[in-house]
Length: 99
Length: 126
Image (cartoon, rainbow over the protein chains, first blue to last red):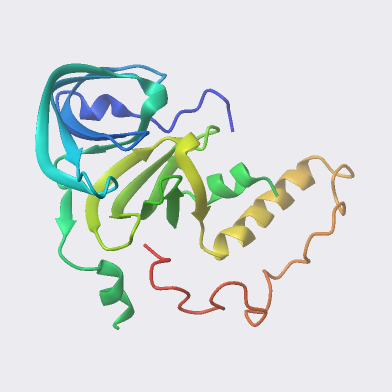
């Protein structure tokens, strides 16, 4: 396993919508404009999805527009494309078990 | 057995990743690197409390946010094969050291561990 190796290939997400989870619990969504090896990201037309006041681990659909943003790499936990992402109405694992 | 070696062998296999924040991601591991960053495909994300679910086509998870990963049992056999191949290249070095289990896989399926052998856990397999 070479040290150089990197599982990261964000090139295909450039100019596409991405959802980013940040350490501490914030979640933002925006158009990926750029990135570097450290996973610093440039997002355009970013919106932050706000969390429920009582239940801070619950993300609501309330959004706060942030505009052009640089996300610091060390704070990025997860990056995924917006397209094709959907919330499921029910537990998909139950169906698999046939329960 | 090195953790990252096991992880590397788990590529193309379904894995479960739990993050430090309690969210879990079930998906096929496309790739991982030496920082434990992982790239998953066909992912199902489960919220910390386990009552919300998302389907995500692919996701990239930063290694330092991972609490643990679950990998399928058969991966461990593959690691051993690869270990063997390596040993054959450099004989007389590391052979026979440690108290590894003999060839022929792991446990007998009876000895338990969490959930026992077949059909373990509802959430386990992506």
